[in-house]
Image (cartoon, rainbow over all chains, first blue to last red; front, side, top):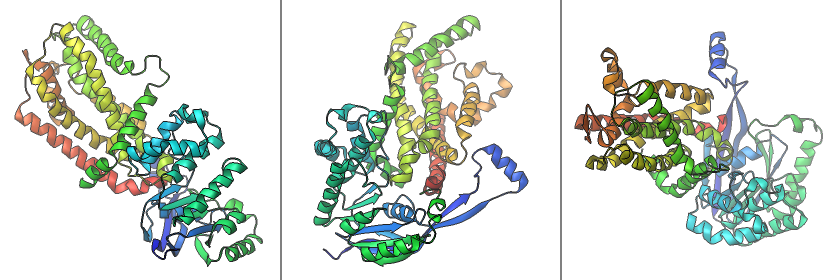
Length: 260
Length: 263
């Protein structure tokens, strides 16, 4: 494992401006203005989190729903600019925050491969040269020229996973998507992630699956209510996760973030 | 501004792909497909020509050419704004999940309408000889007019794309504003047909300067055909264009990092 740091997260706090019943229309804005109401409050989804990830590391992020895991991932992926603190990322990064985020239903699989790749910052030429291996990995076959809205959810996700991993980013950021496809495809995904690791690529993985953490990750971070409680060995992180989850099972359901 | 040029250049392939996607979806499942881009101005022209030259007895020779010379660029402007208002909001899923410069969305909306505009110029090429009008050498000015129009449209697009993120009413307001704006702009009528005491309105209307660059070379004014706009009008069109772009992009840039929380 190389020792160069590829991701530095320094005292990152991510605050959302949550406006209760935000005025979506001008009418609401006016009525609110005259009633002098402003139900704005700041919600800290991630509070003063710092960690470093070295090249070739596979870092798991665990925690209950609403603990700030996804927010943290989005900050690293550059979707959010952190409210305070700094994020430094070296190398290309492919976010798999939600599979097929850039897909458009009316376009064919082939067209979506191109647009998705361009969104990730790759050139048309690069994407065309990778097209065939993406199609092969996703096992889409002739459906590649059919609009993706007609895909089964499994096909859709396989294609998205294939695009994100086939572009060969230095860093892969994954939010709970390993449960895609059937068993065989899941194994294939895991295989690919392990292959990434062997090639000294870095992976950040948010997951609820204990086996993913122990099988795949070298290290794990435990998040709870926006705070980082633990950073270290995956087994220990899981043990701690279980201990904080046990007493208040009801919280997990209610603590969902508005954005996450 | 340099940032905008940089992003547009870096993501030119994405912008192009998004613009084509827009067009493809716009004409998807319609039997005539891209032909609609040609048919729309043609049908609109037929209706307006019937209404104005026969019923209202408007005394403008070669009325079809007169009107289309400004109607086509106006439609580009109006549709770009309508599209841009949806550009950021409509790509919410993407903005929330991938890091991508948000400016590509309004730019792509304008580019897709630009392609549409160029397509809609094809019927004009047929209508000009059909009405007995000729092509003047002054058509060579059109690319310049096009640049001024595009810059102006981009600025307005950035503004409405931003505004609609915060207040979804903007989508509807844009339609109303464009409707009023359309009638206050000499497109279906000549400036001289407007009551003299109200003509100062045109001086305040930036689109008028921009559209001069189309009507004068394609048609003309005051009984003279194939004119070039005066230098003052050219300068005015670019001043309006850049003012629009600078203000529009400045606002867009100021708020773009917040979009992700509101879309």
